[in-house]
Length: 222
Length: 244
Image (cartoon, rainbow over all chains, first blue to last red; front, top):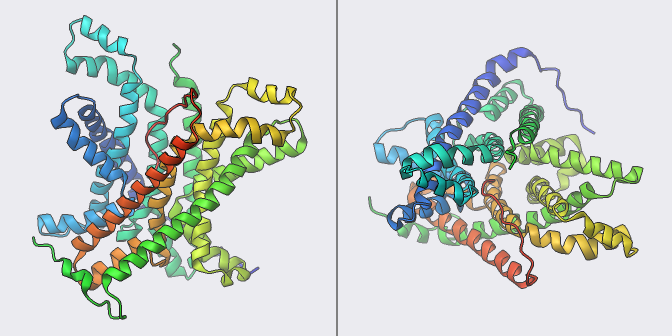
């Protein structure tokens, strides 16, 4: 068994290389979650609108996105954005736009399931009170749909956080890249992968434990 | 913008056209994903079953703990990092593994990553069954093995087939991370040919189309199996979107 050498590990490495990447990974996760939920809910409402003109583009967008690997989507945006606007915007911004666009498709499926899980009687009760479609959605359906879907949304966010490591494909400076960079400089290429795995594991395991506890607490008793 | 599809007829400098190379890359994608699927199903089902064993013996308690640890380990580390661990770290720690081809290491990495999700589904599928089913099997004098083989698994597999379908498609898409360790699959091909020919849009369009076709094919095959093994009158619950 060949020895791994972790003697190079000290706080300095974290501050110099990892912190910057970690902040970007977190930022990317938060923006993609919020943006993804906003656009995803819009897509879900379009799909459930019963209006073919709104429905079809949403179906094509969601199914299209869901049939392509995330790495390819990242590469696509990185290629297309400079092509369309005529200048390069950098890997980090490109990754952020990609993740919002990509996650919207996945969050839309979650929100669609959430909206459909609301009993029809709720919608009818809203209509009986004279509420418009917008009021009904905003005051009756969406709050309950969100609440029912919080555990699934959070689980998706954890997956999203793991997937931010795929920005490796365009060289954006994220948590993984931070470790890889440190590894190259200190000549400890293999060891840093273990450290990266550990950090990801602790964050994701901790978050999923939180989600499990939350799940037990927020379940609506019917 | 004009698309120039002639690029696929050009020689790549090694005596084959870019088109031929692309189909070879497609073959690699399919074989990585296919082999990883076998690994994922085998280990995932085993772990899923272990997690639901009756907790009446010491051995079973420890087996369930082991399987739970397995799932948490492979579920909470990004697949790309896991691929790096298999490809770079394990051969360094265990020099004997340096003889193992990179393809096998990537297949194991992808397969075990996916196995954690399969195990989680199967556990949920088994636990969603009424307890009476297991008790009925015990009352009939079935051994644990027989209970799983003849009572629990036939229904549990049908229950988890729809989410297993999307997970199989996810696996196909996740095989794209193999680019990071230079497996000559579709994503690797796309990145390399984009650089060589500067015809990124044509190349990406073709590769994207191949991924879509493959994912659709997986979906159809799984749907066919689902229909074939349908039990009349048995309604299985649908799944919630998400994942990848």
